[in-house]
View (cartoon, rainbow, N blue to C red):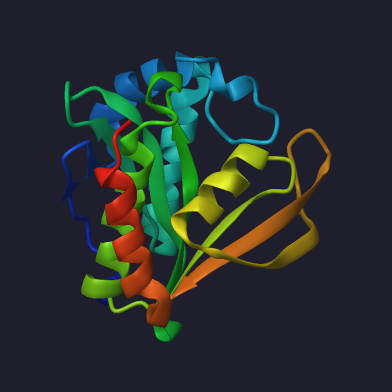
Length: 199
């Protein structure tokens, strides 16, 4: 079997710990998604608690079949599952990948958890995997996500019109952002600065 571009890895920080997603995280995923009824946001793909097992199976299939790496996000302060994120759309030949499928329990939103998760994921992508570009994509109507991605230091590349058909039949316009390797040192410094600021 060919070596994977992304092998399972645990990434630890002061506020967040990223663990390779597995069946043991299912109850924590259910509880995190229920905090704030996140599945009711029509422009996201957060699982309803009753469908968390189906969501988990799809995430693990993406890992096995497409080279993705889904993570459970733990709050480092109490060890609880605070959400999930993943590397996916992996293009090993061109050393590119996307960070996405990211969501957090309401209690973890607008905290240092997301900033540190992105710092951990980007550091691993650029410094361990040797990526030359990392993408972020979000729904046109997900203003909170667009603002959060821009706050990281990613630049908007453009909008993919009618990019996806959603389960409810609507068409998604996808906003694409990226960080390239030449920008990474400044972005890394910026993310470190954000984490040092009083909250």
